[in-house]
Structure formats: C-alpha cells, structure tokens
Image (cartoon, rainbow, N blue to C red; front, side, top):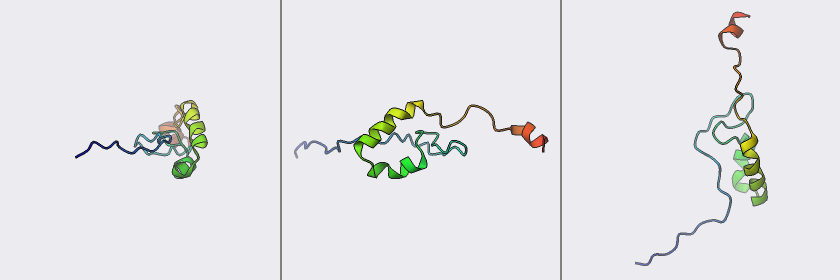
Length: 77
C-alpha cells in the first residue's frame, strides 16, 4: 500500500462554524457573519470575491448588543 498524498482544493475554505442562525434584524448568520446570499453563493464564488468577504467578516456584527424590548416593550402596548 502506498501513502498517496491527499488531494486538496486550492481555494478559500468556508468560514462556517456550524452555528447556523440568522439574526432577524441584521440578516447575518450569528456563527460566521455571512448573509444568506453569501452563504448560498459561496461554492460558486470566485476566489477574489471569497477573499474580499473573508477580509470583511471580522468587522461585521451579526447580532446587535441591545435588547429588542423585552418585558417593558410588551407592557407599553
């Protein structure tokens, strides 16, 4: 038996961390910060477009830190 090298694709891997929840306000995935469109098109994107998105991801905030109202919002109705 020979130790053949494993074939690997020379492309940017997906930033998915398998926490696939889209925030209702930002419309970004809470796990990887990509939009639904970016997630859907990822496998068809050119490497340059993927690299651009990967560079931008650390600056995105998929879930706002403020509360959406909670109990006080319900009481004001």
